[in-house]
Length: 231
Image 1 (tube, rainbow, N blue to C red):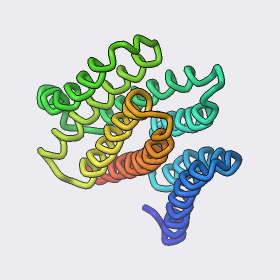
Image 2: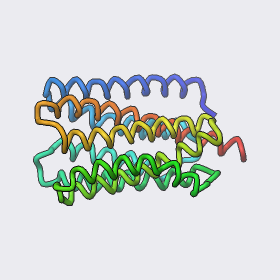
Image 3: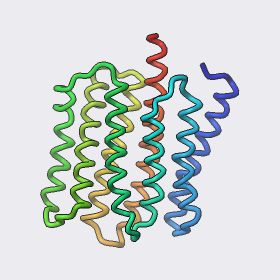
């Protein structure tokens, strides 16, 4: 059970998290790279601390997820470096870890319903893939595989929410919808718009990512509380 001191500390850290997320967006907009990089490093570290403070029974996969987030935040910052492709692979691994966490924490698993609910998301990303088939790149294939994982997350969260709209399922649905929006923005940013438009979509993507990971942290803590109530 959280003490009053811990609750106050968590609230302060949440405020710091969103402050760092918005600083990152403004720093990217102003192209002030040192501040943007510091903000990118700060947000996953704050999520690690918040998760550690907010739960009683920790899940190693959640820590792994936020460490992977830290790695991708740093590697994606250097877009013209040879490590950029590594960042894409780590981001795919990130979604796989996220899927494992959800399958582990969601107690009522109805795979048939989840697959049916995932179909609309899969069709949307399949369409985006088909109309950009001339970009036969390993990078593009990795992004499309990532979109399949995100669609599966969307199907699980949507079917779970429709069956039981508790706090845990609500946070999970919000989180996965934000990640689906982020995946859609990535496709647009990389393959459909001119260089002039890229900065706007990059800023939108940064906000969607920050809110998506925060709501996933809230899902993880809600799942921990639900499990303790059942014990």
